[in-house]
Length: 423
Ligand code: FES
Ligand SMILES: [Fe+2]
Image (cartoon, rainbow, N blue to C red; front, top):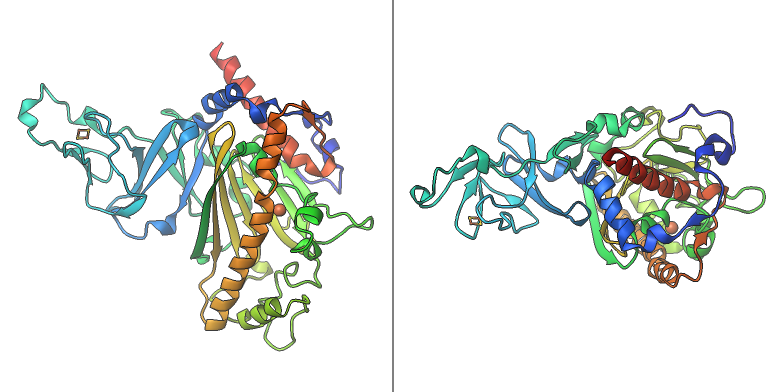
């Protein structure tokens, strides 16, 4: 990321992104999606899980990556190391693992009983003598690169990744070091398939322009407004792939003041005008195992030191959205299925609650966030349908939709670079 210069307009800081209207063809074209698959999704590191999902040796997880034309199994070996491999049997290509997750000593193919160890080595072949010079080593499951960052498990289906995960994450790699990711072990999740392009879907989560309208009745009052009454981000940072946006809250609101739930019991928190929200917040105070103070804040979080800071949005290109707050985090994947279908895989991580009141607070926040997410999802399929009418060829983007512009720019640049390499 480039060093932050004092409040510079984003379009001047990132002149390479330009200011022109952005074409919508990449959001509706099956041909463009095929180029994205070839030059992006089959090349880059993709987030698939948290390490806490593999507490024991033998724990495994299977994940479908349609944009990489891949089905992957991730295992944890007896030495604690992670392994990833294609979920394709070396005999006649059946899927070896059918379940989404579980624990096992070996991976058994249900078609003819071939078995593999946790690292994918072929260890059992029924009637092996009937084969012709079977080379067991060559019949291991095809390996997939796997690595972790801050407890997030990433895979790369490129047989020879051009970059390590650390190189790919670049400046983001160290910027968030120190955030208590490992303490946020209480997770809930939702999954749904949205009939919209993956870029269009993630774009709806990486700007604040929509908040006053889509979230008018719910959380719009929780974000800080500028003098003109607009909700604008504190700052944004873009690099070659990834991007970050920092958002300020309205400190007088329950949602916009993330410290409200963590302040010492005593004073009643600011009233939201919603009795149930206020009660949940009161019950939640001091009900969490971990608290977070400014000494836990890594340099990449609230990097402008804004006193009203509420949360940051981090987008690890291409499809991993990581929103970090003082007391919880949201980790979403917008996994492409086709040019106009996306799996929205939303996970929210809290610290363990230590009191019944804490659990009630957590449940309340879960339902509140669900409703906000439904508001976000409400525009996506309509927007996709609008794009597909081709009534308009370009979208108009303003200064504070820079993340949307950056997403389109990175995708297009990677396709052009990939095609140039192949020529
Ligand atoms: S396809 Fe797996 S054992 Fe035959
Ligand atoms: Fe939203």
